[in-house]
Length: 93
Image (cartoon, rainbow, N blue to C red; front, side, top):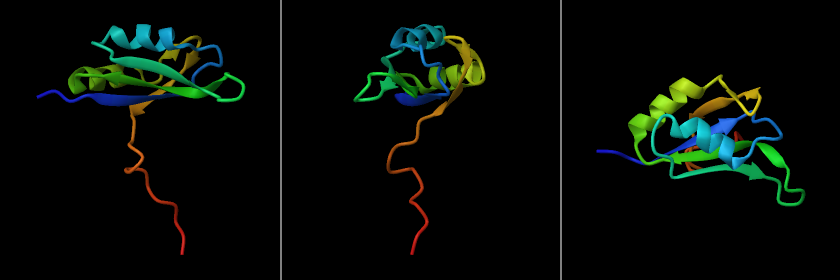
């Protein structure tokens, strides 16, 4: 059974675009979407993006292959994206 996986790509070069992510990840399987997150006001890259792959086995292979590799001229951090509900709550009283 395959499950769609959302992948986080961090430390992106300022000039990285959606096509850079798509090209890097499609070498490892089908890509549903690839997007660099942009600042709402300036339109500049915020330095990270997300890729969605419909097959989690391919997604895991892509994560293993691309973590630490260069995309658009800069080494990137690649891992499984955490859903908003999975993130740890801030410590507090």
